[in-house]
Length: 107
Image (tube, rainbow, N blue to C red; front, top):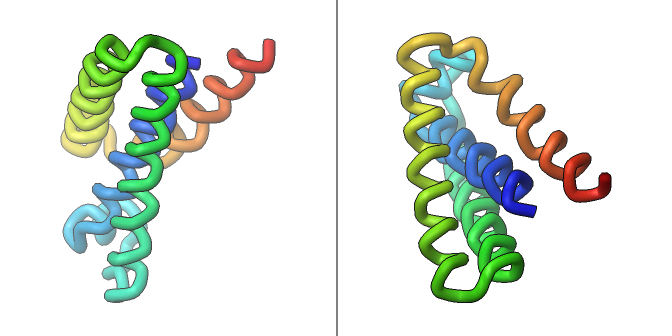
């Protein structure tokens, strides 16, 4: 369940990244509308909260919060470094990581 939580944190950080006009243009070659920006922010916040909830469910509350914040930091660092180094990898990984976390949870 921890890998799924990290995948959701990565997906949430990607959504927050896409809510910024500069990154949206770099990844999707168009500027986001105001409604899309607000929607991406809401989805990003919801995914980050869901990742934190999965960590709290899997571990106790104190360790779940610490692990969730560490995963959030690692996901943000991953998205930031990938945007600078290989921006073409950001979107495929945002689909692969949560899906592989779900497969690992079901296996």
